[in-house]
Length: 200
Length: 344
Image (tube, rainbow over all chains, first blue to last red; front, side):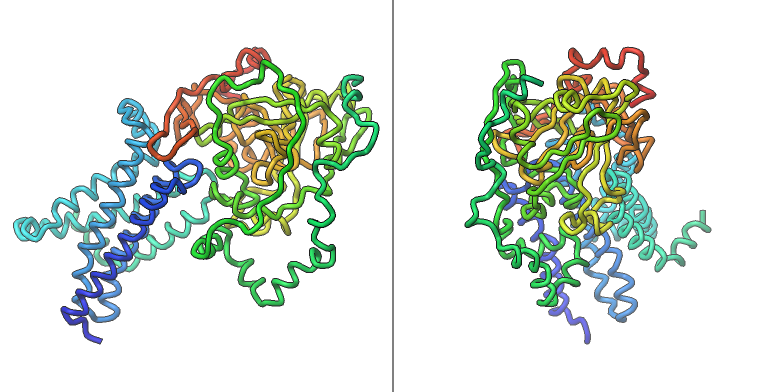
């Protein structure tokens, strides 16, 4: 099957629906007061999982494109990547506004003292950089440097599952599965990673 | 003890725990219920899917368990000193936001998975270094001791808290009844082990990696402290399963995981018993586990807590965590000679 522009359009539309519907569902849960006894924790966890899953999807695109020999698939990466950013913004926004209630001193104490929050914060900085440089014009202007910057998504794929793993009380099985998935996704890119490491 | 006798009824009345005959599932049907499901060929499939996933599937078809567990009103006194001084957490949140890994690790799992839990018959055995070992059945739990309502704040180690009106009797009154021997130093508690009824005990993914049965412990002095409560109810009614039916411990100056649920065994000992969270992660959860804003969890701060009250997302509030969860006046002297940084 060939990925014609029309089919690509439909694929993008489907991905938008898939990525956005959990957010709509979350808004519905919050508005109907059915997000559990502690909606703040629910919201933070939900958006965190959204970010994780969209990141997995983003990192799946290029291996899939290679495997299916469908170069045009790569055009869905920006869309997916920006959803990772959107979920991360909601995740951190909920943490700062609803959990910490804008107590900035507490935030800095938490970031410095808690390794898992430090990892999450570092990951978010990377995501911000990737998001602001995701526009076509910026990409062209940056030339070669764009690719090296955007390869820092590999670092993100390392930080994010550890952030999840360290944040739970004892239910390590689910985060362990994610650690394994991300390890697999990085394994598929061992060539590129070797390149990056050798060049420096 | 004479005090307790006054509450023992002369005539055996219909217990608050018992269902009327017409509501009882015939034994044959009850015993065969799993086979009925298995014959449908869903047993193996169902058992392999953790509860969260199952709940997710059934959410689409209306998310509430078909028949909620039946609770019954209790009779109790309302001692002045235990009446609420702060807003209560609504009952709907107390009964739907629970950590009870035997029924799944997500906060909504216990409510979703525990409604069929059977609490009658029940046997709570008090044994070990006692003069008169005793077994309490479901009836005794409601009738043997004078029940009272006590509103306590429950502070979870995950840095959230609730204010709950419990109904129960003091652990001290139970221990006095059985008579504690002089060499006793500790009291061990154990939750029911019943993988048939508790999916978290048969599936590691659901049970959060805890080694079951869940066990907890107190020193004798802690157990004899007037605040230590054996709760059999909340909000004036018998406990629902997700909150630890039919009987649970409540030690309000300690993190919530010390307040063990659905207790079947209390053993008086002369050494410190093992405790479940301490076994799982000794550097994160100590034996004492007193609420202490000055000693952080290695991975998060214990200085403040999110107070779960009325309202939804935007009414969340964060309060300062108090030493001993605000019960220092009653318990601080228990630890006068203890370095609470070392014995967290």
